[in-house]
Image (cartoon, rainbow, N blue to C red; front, side, top):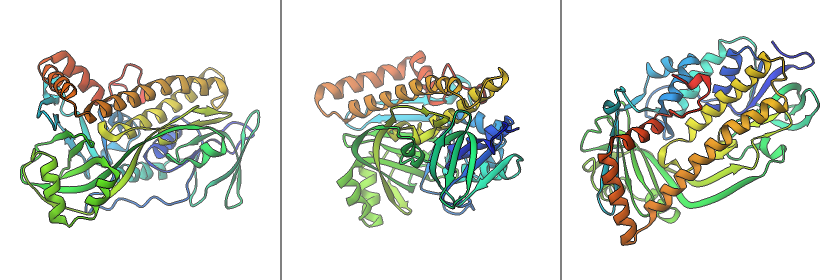
Length: 404
């Protein structure tokens, strides 16, 4: 039930996976919600796999299960990852992590982003207490002591208890709030496409680290792989322009033929890679979630998972504040959200940067140390178990929706 004097408790700007998960979680918790986005979600309808996919961890899967969205996803198209294989492209040292070694059915699932969006939107449409303003965009925010006056670009106005920016790396709401962002360009693009391979993927996610960036094969349910190839900008542009046959040969060579020859590829696209982190996650009655707060290198596929945890944590602090008779959109709840999520996200960003730097070095000492490290890790069960726990999203301070 909404607070007195407001139209809704929470306004979410952005209908991506994170924004929609936040809407559903908040509505499930009994908060009234408004969803605002400039574009309609294009529903998933099957056919060729989308270019943009996510590696959904077990923690994120539990969040989607508790939001009654995962069953819809799993019934359509989700590729289980039963093992992860990482290879150094200069030394050929390999380490393998298997879910079977820790008694789990899988480490993650590879799912198209739009499929998750569609599942969450279907759930949202069946819920009460949710208003939808699409197409529309937030044009002005005026924070008041007990609410935020929001003006949309179509002329409509709302008074809300809390605004959540879930509108991506170029967040308009973050800009309106005057929150600065620290950004660093990696000088790379992530080239993505769907590829067919000579050898079966056997539900193993494979990654080969090269000086220019990692090439990753993510297993899809139809036997093909979703490719994410991080590489310098000029090389990515050149490879986008290659014929299919020339591109498949270049990829076969770069991958060390870890899945044999690349026998075909679909449409190719590339997007710039950068690190981005907001100075603050909160302002007066405003919170940043997902890419609006942080963007990390895709080499471990953790971007969307961090966003799901943001959404679940924000709803958890709102619910806790309400239970204690406090304001769910007030400074106490928002400070707790920022403390909870900012450190975890920064730690993951820094870890990805260390991997990016370490595997980008070509000197003999670095190659030797990497080879030794991978070999030792492959033989040390505790180290492998720790890595797999992180790959599954099993952190120490998960929000309730993500816990076992």
